[in-house]
Amino acid sequence: MARRSTGFVSKKPHRKSRGGCLTCKRKKVKCDETLPACEYCASRRFKCEYLQDLFSTPKNRSSRSTPGHGSPSLKSNAVCLPNFNNPSFEWLVPSFQTSIGDFTPLDHHLLQYYKANVCHSFVVSGDIIVKKLHRDIVPQLSISHPFLLYALLSIAATHSNLETPNPELERQSLLYRQKTFKCYQSALENFTAENYEAVLVTGTFLLALVQPPVSNKDSEYLDWILALLKLSEGLRVLASLRWGQGIEKLSVYPLVRRELRTLPPPPPSAIVHAEKVGVVAPVGPLGSTPVNPNPAPTYTPTQLPQQTPLFLPPTLMSLLQSVLQSSCLGPLDWHRTTLLPVFHALSPIFISLYYHHLNPDFYVRIFVFTSFLMPEFLQLVKDREPRALVLVAWWFALADLVPKGWWVGDKVANVVGAIGRAVGMGNHELARKAFTGAQVIVDVFEREGSDEAAKSVFEGWHGVDWEEGPGRAAEWEIRQLVDLDGFSMEIVFDIENYGI
Image (cartoon, rainbow, N blue to C red; front, top):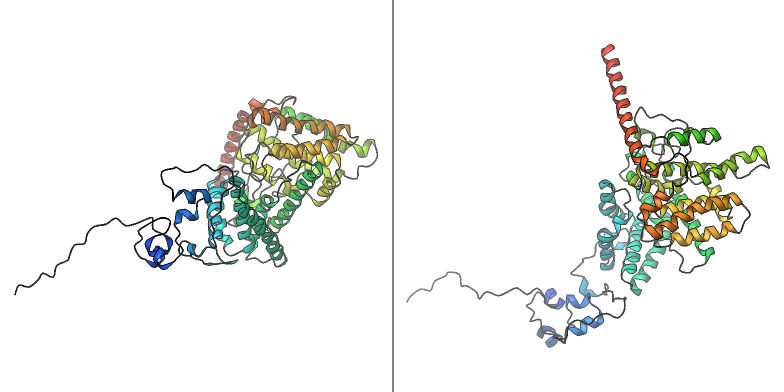
């Protein structure tokens, strides 16, 4: 009898199904993809769900059973969030342990959403290192620190809800926000070297967790800006703990540095005027003043602390002169020592804008300006002292020129308007005049955009030409390179002479 071949028996080729229901995928059986329920689920009375159903709106789900009629258009901006607690998601996103326990599918979805859609909005410098920190390092760091993880999840949920309104996301964002502040407070009470970087990074995100007012009441906008300043004060204190003790060596240091480039001195005409009226920034150690705000080791050997004339708009300069002269020409100004450092902190912002126009260094200086504000100044803002409010208005108006964070939205004009009305209620004429410059920035920005608004800042400055700034900066930088090269050659010469 002939022996049968033991060779392989070819099978009938078939196309592997990619659209089967979730039950068949879990059971690893072939799904016939019948709608509304496949044969396998129908015969066993299982709930039959398809992946498309979980991520579609109720109307879109019903459209699957009535082919040929097209997808109905949504009449509402609200969408149906997938039920991430559905057991069907277990095979899609396996849970794993994090600082907040098991990572749920919703948590995973929001963290990925942060990396894909949100993290870039916190990068104002354009630095590739900062981008990588926000996209990769910070999320990785959050896995071990609940306060940071809750902050990222709240920010992601809030952003997603703004893009596509959803009641469930709105509720979750509030829940995550509450947990962020609760865990953050606990971390501050149990401060360690191990959680310092995570606590510091979380401090940079807290501003995005303070929701802007929903009404148009001036009092609410003034309270909101005070809340932002208060949170910034906490970040200043945290950074100061390591500022002179190697903070520049931390992986997250690029997120808290205060300047990206060393600035030239003000233009000659401004220097002459500032020296004439006696408005100069005090000399201090590197890393301790707005002129040289980064840690001392980050500067070159040729950079030494020096007295720098202030560079401020004419109306702010007049307001500053009134503060300086009050002790000589009138009653003692008890707020003088509190206000002066804020004028000093504003000056480098205007210098950066003049020489380099709208640039990452200007954006960073705007972001860190609040780190120079002391508690006494915040108390003046709370008390609505006119000059303190004017200084805040100028900073907030300049912040309008930064590619703004989505959490601020269009609230800048509302805040500046509220401050203007509060200042107008007093009888401080110089404060009212100084405020008008901040209002002009906001008005020009709304009409003509950020470039024209930036240019408007320098209109009316004696001897200051907006167009000349970048050229002057380039000339100064070339001179610095020549001086540095000469300094290096002197060192080589000395080494050779001493036979080192």
